[in-house]
Every structure is written in C-alpha cells, then in structure tokens.
Amino acid sequence: MKILLAGGAGYIGSHTAVQLANAGHEVVIADNYYNSSPEAVNRIQELTGKEIPSYDVDVKDKAKVDQIMKEHKIDCVIHFAGLKAVGESVQKPIEYYRNNIDTTLTLLECMKENDVHAFVFSSSATVYGEENPAPYTETMTRGRCSNPYGWTKSMMEQILEDASKADPELSVVLLRYFNPIGAHESGRIGEDPQGIPNNLMPYIAQTAIGRREKLTIFGNDYPTPDGTCRRDYIHVMDLADGHVKAVEYACENKGTEIINLGTGTPYSVLEIVHAFEKSNGIKVNFEFGPRREGDLPEFWAESEKAEKLLGWTAKRNLEDMCRDTWNWQTKNPKGYNA
Ligand code: NAD
Ligand code: UDP
Image 1: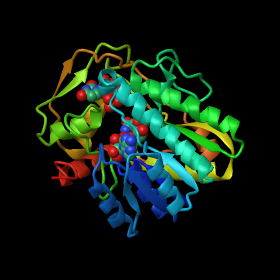
Image 2 (image 1 turned 90 degrees about the vertical axis):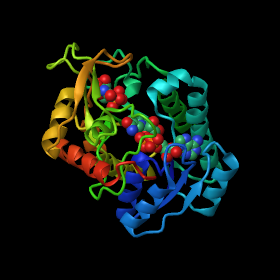
Image 3 (image 1 turned 60 degrees about the horizontal axis):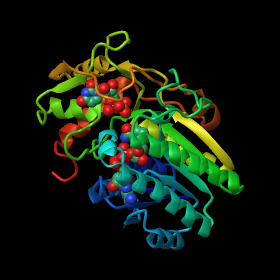
C-alpha cells in the first residue's frame, strides 16, 4: 500500500516510515520541517535502502496536498503534522488551533477529492482529560483537557468521527498514544527537540550528556508509590509497529475505531531516572522541584483493544527504551543538524 505521512519527518513519523517501508509499503512524506529536519528523511532512506518521495509543504496548503495526492495513488493518510508543546499551546492557542485543525480539514478535503478512504490519526492520552481514572479505556468519554494542545486533539477526534459517520466509505483509526520514548536501535533516527526539551526522556538524555546541568523532577508529593508522577512509557519502535497494523486495519475496514497505544504498565519519574542510570551506567543529576501545572498524578493504558483488533502489543521493555535513547543521544549529541 502507498501511505502519505503528513509530518513524516518528525519523531514518531520517521520511525513509522522505517517500519512501514520494512513491511513492504510505499511511503510518501509531506512535512514543512517546522519541528524536524530533511536529514531525517535521508536517514530513513539510508535505513530502509528505499527512495522515499518527500515534499517540503505546509499541510494546510490545499493545492500542494492535492498535487501530492494526484501524483501518487495514496491508499491511506497518517496525520502526524501537529504542533505538540503543551506549554507553548497555552501561550499561542490560535496558532495551535489553526495548525492542528486546519491540517486535519485540509487532508480530509483532499482525500475526498482524490478517493482516499483511510485515515490514521495521531491522537493522545491527553483526551481522556482530568476526570477519567486510570487505566484509560477506549470506551470512556473524552474528558476536559487542561490546555489548548489537548483540546485540538479532542476536537480533531470529533471532526474525524463526524466525517466518517457522514461518509460510509471513510475509515478512521484514532490512535491514542501514551508516552513515546526511545529511538531506532541503530541510533540514526531519534527525537530531536528544538531548544530546551519539555519532555522527560530527552531532558534526562541531555542532562546525562552534559547539555543541561540537572533534571528537575516536577513534584514528589503526589499520591503515588514514590510521590512522583506515573506514566505509560512506550518505545517509539513499538508505536511505529502499531501504525503499520493500524494502516492495514484502516484499509480493510470502515467507520471509526479508537485505539490506545500503550504498554499498560506505569513507571514513575524516579523509576525512569534510575532505569536510565542502570541501563547506561551513567549518573543523572537531578533535584526535586514544585509540581508542573496541569500534570496529572498518574495514568496508563488499558491496552487490550489494540491486541484484539490489531494483533499488536508492545514488545520492548524499559531497558530497551533507556538504552536506545542513550545510543541516539551519544551518536547525535546535538541532534540532526550538528
Ligand atoms: P514532531 O514535532 O517530531 O513531528 C511532527 C511533524 O509535523 C514535524 O516534522 C513538523 O515539522 C511537522 N508539521 C507540523 N505542522 C506542519 C504543517 N502545518 N505542515 C507540514 N508539516 C508540519 O512530533 P511527534 O512527537 O513526532 O508527534 C507526532 C504527532 O503525534 C503529533 O501530532 C503529536 O501531537 C502526536 N503525539 C505526540 C506525542 C509525543 O509524546 N511525542 C504524544 C501524543 C501524541
Ligand atoms: N517531568 C519532570 N521533569 C521534566 C519533564 C517532565 O519531572 O523536566 C515529568 C512530568 O511531570 C511528568 C512526566 O515527567 O510526570 C512525563 O512528562 P512529559 O512532559 O514527558 O509527558 P506528559 O505525560 O506530560 O505528556
């Protein structure tokens, strides 16, 4: 099958591109490199030994997306092309709503005009909101989000559900990711955050390599076993494998399916720090600081639906996630453009 990856040069998109190509699918990438680098596409090609057509386009640009769909007979679109920094979304809500929602609408319109009927969407556990207790199951209703980023995901899910209800030909898979970390085992592709990382794992890795002085653990007085927050961390390669299954599912079915991609096991921030130290034989300088606004004490996935529907479960463990993150970090201390 031929898959268009909107935002395919980014962290999750690049790993998914490799796994799709390895599974025998054809991949086309559309990305404006707002939060990524064309070097990622070079490395996807290097890892797969395949030429990957890539387009430097803003996915809000309907004429250009239409042109790509006319040039390639696309079977399925995966939409990764979102702005994703929670804190920034509070400062720049209009940019977040414009980018995330407009890209979704543009892709849907172009798909309709070009007879493309399968859509896989990068959603997030954040749509479960503040009310739902862990573990999160797909049958729970979407909750109240604590920031504009989360609301864009919630709204886009609604838009996609409405679109598939109105069009019996359209198949939508809403993938709710938990906390992706790690990198391809080669260390050639990985997460390359611009500026100071917001997320835990890149912050740990940059602290370990000396780019940051110390990690601040946001709060140690939560009602959790060690007082630090717990999350469901998932290896990005497992997540990528989940997309391969989701694309194949979307191409064979109709309607909307919501699917969690998580391991079902939560780890605390302290457990992650200690696992990183143990797996890599390196100390991570850290201190405890105040809680970060908007953080929930703990959540993790109920992951049975992915297994039943897609035949997918996460295979890589926490040690793999820590080792592969450090392998990428040490081989690319300043990311792609060093
Ligand atoms: P990323 O920033 O690395 O990748 C997103 C890619 O989309 C980037 O390459 C960026 O340049 C591109 N992009 C953004 N807007 C664009 C536009 N208008 N036109 C063309 N390209 C555009 O992020 P990621 O971590 O790979 O996340 C991918 C998706 O998964 C995002 O939608 C994100 O919200 C979602 N998600 C990520 C996480 C996570 O922890 N990484 C968790 C849940 C959901
Ligand atoms: N965290 C932390 N210090 C950091 C970054 C994150 O203690 O510098 C904690 C954060 O409070 C949360 C967990 O690590 O409990 C995961 O945060 P991240 O931003 O990676 O993902 P989130 O679950 O918020 O999407």
